[in-house]
Image 1 (cartoon, rainbow, N blue to C red):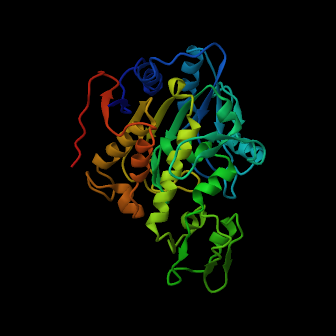
Image 2 (cartoon, rainbow, N blue to C red):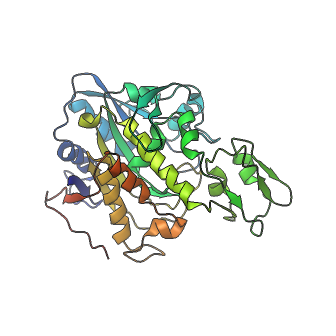
Image 3 (spheres, helix red, strand yellow):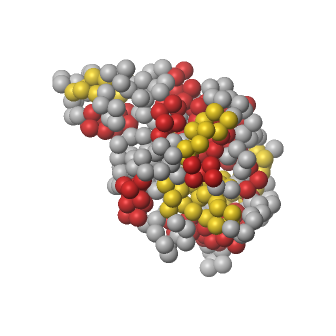
Length: 370
């Protein structure tokens, strides 16, 4: 089974604080990682949309950049352009948003590189053996990097149930064309009894597929399935009712994650920050009340195990509206979010079975799953 290392957020001394624990997670979970001097290492993050503050803080990523340099690597911060309209759909706006959200030197001593270029058209085709794909479109800078440190905010997601390392690697490393291919099976529907014709979904639609008169109408032939209308609707009037299509999206994300790390497994490590576990993703420019209190950080060389561990930790934790043992993500979104984990394991990306180890004692932990 894979090893996953855990740190809570409590510390008592200057020597044992959150920054030192983030570094220790690298030293322990990635103890066999060796970089040749100057190798380019992608720190795959989410820079956050304008108006949101639940993305991982730059000051928490800074120690990861430091330990990568200590290991001989040359780190850079990166993400790909978004499919939806927003503040990160091209490299110029993406850079500006990153700067406004604090991704600057000397806060983090690593430059920002938008991996798929100015308009999201710079990518490589990577061959894989998947159920849905034989090749995937990965952002050029991520493909050219010698290793990837996935630094993910673990939270809910309106299409995949939860978003963690697999989502950060799969959707987050794909070019804009790749994102379209992954989303294309999702077709939203409008509940006209709830729709108030506010027009927010139409304003957000990148495909110009929505018109609003007495209620919103989605032209499915134009729809690219990005899901932005669903998370934008203030009345929760837009749903995706075909769960089989949602399962396809999860499987496709897992296959893109496989392509993103191809040839890099020995030089890659994955963090999940289980804090601000909001119901929706960080692509929204607002926040909702977290599903559970802040839990901690997990790290592993196995991207499947690190997501499974984070998922289990959220499940066992009592939340504001959900009891310990409740599958919060499934209850919130009416989606089976473990499809991505099952498929990722099936295609050889990693293992769901893991041993959880406390970073402070280096002893195994037991989860109190009901």
